[in-house]
Every structure is written in C-alpha cells, then in structure tokens.
Amino acid sequence: MKMQYESRSLALSKQHINSVLFVACFAAVAMAIFASVSLYPGSVKGQELGGTEVGAVQNATNMSSSVSNSSLVHFDSNIEQIRGHLDQAVANKEIGNTTLAKAHTLHPIEEIYSSIQVQIDSTDPSLNQSLSSSLNQLSNMVDNSSVEEFMTKALDINGLLNDTVGKVIPAQEINGSAFNLMVVGNLLSVADNEYKEAIENGQLKEIVEYQDGQAFISRASSIFNESSPLIPQEKSADVPVINEFFADLGDAVQEKSNPEVVSNAIGSIIHEISEVTGINEENISGTGSGTSAYIPEIRTLLNQTLDAYENQNYDQADTLAIQAYLDNYEFIEAPLAEQNRTLMETTELMLREDLRQLIQTHAPIEEIQEHVDKINSNLNQAEELLAASG
Image 1 (cartoon, rainbow, N blue to C red):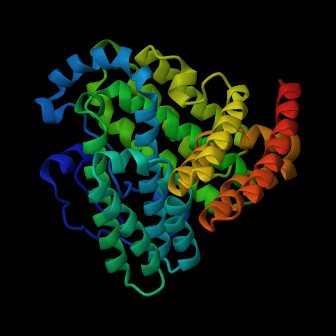
Image 2: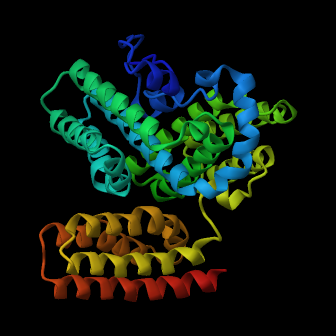
C-alpha cells in the first residue's frame, strides 16, 4: 500500500502524524518500496523559520559548519536507516512475508540503536525508553498483528523518531540544506555497501541487504527532494542533474546491475552534492580518508570496550562494540570482500554478534579479551590486504 505523510519537520512542529491514506496494494515488495513514496518523509528545511528565503540565508552558514557536525550527520543518517528498515518491514508485512518483515524490525534494534541511544538518553531518557520499547513491540507484532495494526505502530515509531531528531539535532542544522545533503551522501554510502553485499555477478545473493540498499536510497532521494528548494539559487541548476542521477540509480538497482554501476551512480550524486555545498566528497559520503582510517578506529573502540566492560559499565561496552561495527567495519566490508570474502564475513560475525553476545551475557573479562584478540588478528590480515590492494 502506498501511504501519504506530512514532511518530517512539519511533523516535528505539529507533534502528530496524519492518518494513513490507503491508495493501492504493492505489486511486489522490491519494486514497490523503491518506486513508491517512502513511509517516512525527509525534511522540508527552512519552512519552520519562515520559508525558503530564510532557509537559504541560513544555508550559507551551514555550508561551512556542517563538516564539523559529522556526528550529528551520522546520528540523523542512523535515524533515516531505521525509517528505511520500517518501510521494508511494512512492505513485507503487506505481502505476507513475515520472515523478511521480522528481519527489518530486528536490524534497527540489533545493528543501529546502540549507536544512537547514548545521545538520545542524554537528551531525554524517557524518549529513549519509549523509542526502544516501541521498536521491540513492533518486532513482537510481526506474526500476530493485522497489516493495519502493524502500520499504525510503525507510524507511532516515526513520530518518536521525529521527536528524537527535534531534540538531538539543533534547528539550524535540520533546517539547512547543507546538513541534509550530507545526510543524503552518508545514506548513499551505506546503501552502496549494502548493495555490494547483496548482488554478485548480476545475481541476488542477500535479499535483506538488497532491500536495505533500496530503502536507504529511497530515504536519501526523499530527503534530497525535500531539501532541494533551499539550495542557493546559483546552484539550483544542479538539482535536475542530481534527480537524473537518482533516476539512473533507481533503474540500476531495480535491474540488479553489477555493483560497479550502482557505485558509479552514487558517486555521481555525491560529486554533484560536493559541487553544491563546497564540502569534499569524502566528508559528504562519510568515508573520511578511505578504508585506512577505519581499522585503527576499530582497535581503539575495542580497547575502550574492554575498559568499559572491566569497570562493569556493560551498556557502554555494548554501545562501543556496536560503534566499532556499525560506524567503522561496515565501511570496509565491501573492499575487504573483494580480497577475502571469508575473512570479511567471519570478522563481521565476530564484531556484530559474538562480541555483543559475550557482553550481554556478562562473560568473564578473560573471554572478552581473548575474543577481541582474535578480532584484532583478523583486522591485521584485513589491513594488509587492503593496503596491498591500494
């Protein structure tokens, strides 16, 4: 079913969500999500401050400040990834594929929420509790709820996400195009990695990752469309160019083209966004100086995880572990898979699942240390392979 929603920033100001408009049934989940309007709209920047004229003035300031706010960009990107997962959960629920619907309700809980909950909790502990509880409730509803009940719960979560964005991210950021264009770039970079895991030699290998890629691209497209009216007039000619690249990207994903084709389309969008904002492409995509910076950061976070665990700060240890995976390892998965897929997948499992399970079950510190040592050994191999590949 297609649904119509008001914009994110408008929802933030009104503090409610419009009722659902049922238009039509999805023909197929893969095509429907990418072709349809996303469950959760992006941000119409500047309107709360008096329209596009004021927003455009603020945008000039945001162009220079957004690079220093990369943590907020990443936070907002994670929020949008949760929305994308919920889009896919609803779409799969509608066609009766509860297995995939369940997977998309679990990913926000298992892979994303730990990396943002500290920021939410420090701002509003009650909101943090409500959002975390609602995500778990949605996952528990997959098998036993109607489509309408499930969709209503997803909408409730969207409202909580709106509240979260409004409380954590300053208004001058979420109402400026530069910040949001950086979120677009970050989402596209994550989508690129997901797609590379999903498609191999033109064949669909991982359906969940394929749907992730679709959803994150859809979110990025929505945010761009809603932010583009605030792009300065002298750069407005780039808007139709970027829209054309988004159309090419959508076609490539729909046709399950080789990952290189998708990467090229994403690279073209990020290049154009760089031209619009004056921010370098690495900062827009969130890739920094390439893969070389991620492995040392993972090691640092693992050491911090051990320190937190030894001090019995288990929640903090869990947050640091998920940050090592989600904010860092995910960005080397694709290039590492090209060199040694088995090493990539083994290390991913050790970081994403095994380490967190050890932390959550309060395993002896010696067992945690031994596991971290094994991860570091794998990272040494990864570092050598990536360095050799250039």
